[in-house]
Amino acid sequence: MSTEYILETQDLTREFKGFIAVDKVTLRVKRGSIHALIGPNGAGKTTMFNLLTKFLPVTAGKILFKGEDITSRKASEVARMGMVRSFQISAVFPHLTVLENVRIGLQRKLGTSFHFWKPESSLYALNEEAMALLEQVDLSSFAQTQTVELPYGRKRALEIATTLALDPELMLLDEPTQGMGHEDVGRVVELIRKVAANRTVLMVEHNMNVIANLSDTITVLARGTVLAEGPYEMVSKDPRVLEAYVGTVEETE
Image (cartoon, helix red, strand yellow):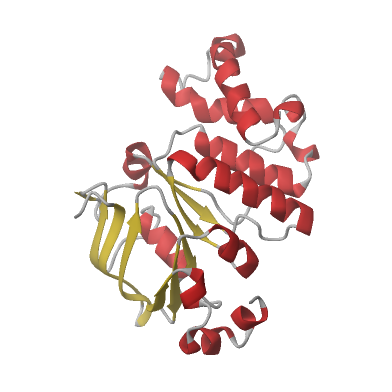
């Protein structure tokens, strides 16, 4: 594997009782890039994410991360290696404060992740670093807010902050702008661009304006296979992509 690529799959395949959800997909993600994985519903995008992060076992093929074969690794091992994902559904603790949510992500550095009997004060050493992460995602003014009270777009920003707390080299973002209004979408787009400055991002996203705005490379999936790949200007004009999207891409040009 070339050091140019942080992630590579080779003929990656996942079968569910005779149905092939991902069919011999070869994907290469360049270090320091924002790479989008798109496709119509049922194309295999979320299955790909689940295979890459080891939430699902691989039927056939290989996954290489930073030059290492991680095909048979556990999800926790892959996360510790530096590949961390967010989910379509917000995965934060609603009844903790914004600061406390980020601090949980930072606990691993203290080696106290499962030391539930220790007092909360043992975590105060992480407050400064947690606040720095909140500053990065424009949430410092919400630090003491109970997370359940945050607007939806701010919750997604908090989820990105908790992902950053794990210091990933590769962030996998699953539908980061799903369900957002225009203002929140703009804020999250700028946030992704900011956090991608010194790391690699692979994202699944339906909003083609977001894709056009952010992506260096786009891989289009359809029926579990790679339909097209390249920059937005090329992919958005590909007749096969236009057909697969039934006009969705065309409308955003």
